[in-house]
View (cartoon, rainbow, N blue to C red):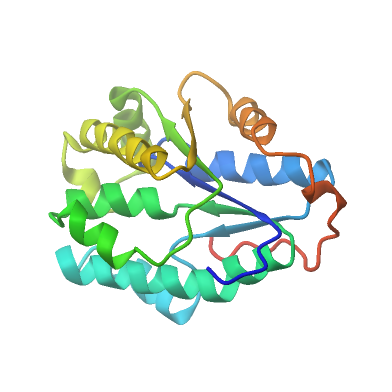
Length: 218
């Protein structure tokens, strides 16, 4: 991360089917209503590299995919996250480092390699980890439809929930404030309010937004 960081960085991660993207949208809308200079973004991004990563995540595996995801993240940091933070914006990223520590581990990549290849990405000021009962997550995936090879594993939701707890513990050990929230028992709006309450009001409220908040992905 380059110097001059004046903004605040929030990452939101969680198992597939936990309602993460809906919660991120609710959080963005709430912060915007509060007059906060918020920028919503997502990984993988919609750049050429990000689109390639998303399109090939079902065919690439292991170390190759882990390196591609890391490359996409470094581009994301350089082109979106760093400039927004230097401008004093509040950045909310739908998926970030915690997702790598979970999904790439499920793909057979050692956590030590994942930490090494991502060692130069900036840590979030607040890492939100959404969770829910594995049975609820599995039911949501079935209702939504299978969209990724990880969804085929019947034990996938249980493994994701456990690994996200490990990721939360790792981020805490590195000094990141972690908010672990049960997204199965509350509405996205309720969860968004809890996240917003954990974000400091100053100095962000006094910093004018320099650009419209445009998501960098679907």
